[in-house]
Length: 342
Image (cartoon, rainbow, N blue to C red; front, side):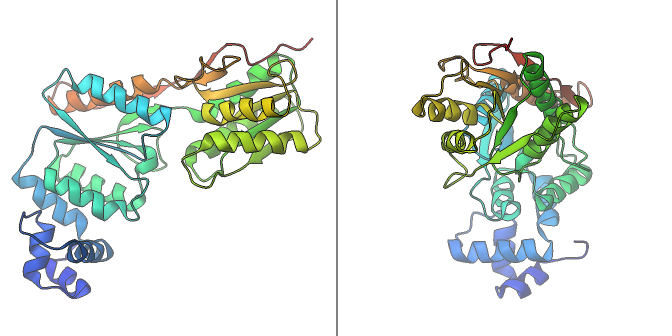
């Protein structure tokens, strides 16, 4: 927010301007954790973080690249980070990894880490890009030329260059593939639709049905006890789909981990894949080829997304070329979990 100073932060936090200055400048002077967090919360509330970060980055820059993703427990983000690491290993830059899944206020505690490190550039997954954090990075990018590369999908109205994947088309292709194999009674299995990519996939599934003049496809949604276990979502949805009483011949899923959970859940009920019902995944994670049967899926080139994002940032840092967004297209990886109907 223009015109906001440390005095505003001091007033909001109830702390002295000296203490506030020490925290917001990234000083090594010892300040207890509770006080530091109180000041960061106040800075975020009054809109001081962008200005604070901008001043910090003027004074010191390292060869560190900040890589920001929601989590790395999933094969998808693990592969992306692997791709980034592979690309940076051949450069003079190092990677610092920052996870936002458990941060209640990513735009303060995470930004504080970046201030202390004075990073040379940022690679950020779209699912970590809250609006407040976007505002911080955008101001740094515009005023301090901090290179920022986005990846995975392009959030609406965001201006950063990046490496993006077309989730809508991927889901549409998945259902069209099932149609071409003779399936018309298809269920769609997903976690709750509170991520943009999940909504894009659901929209693609619906578009495929509409293009064929078919009735609306059935959506099955479930959530595990936490957001870490899409596998258990798949196991649970296998029961729900079978208990619905409808004679589905195929299930499309929003990711491979759910699809693998479906394989297990259906097997528990004596349902054979693909003889009794077919399944198509989405991701082409490392485990998709290890299941029995091996999983037919839509490929997201996750390692390549990481590598391309890192190379895009390196090219920007080394002034070889201005960043231009890359849009990656999906394709079907055909294995054994989909049966062609007569």
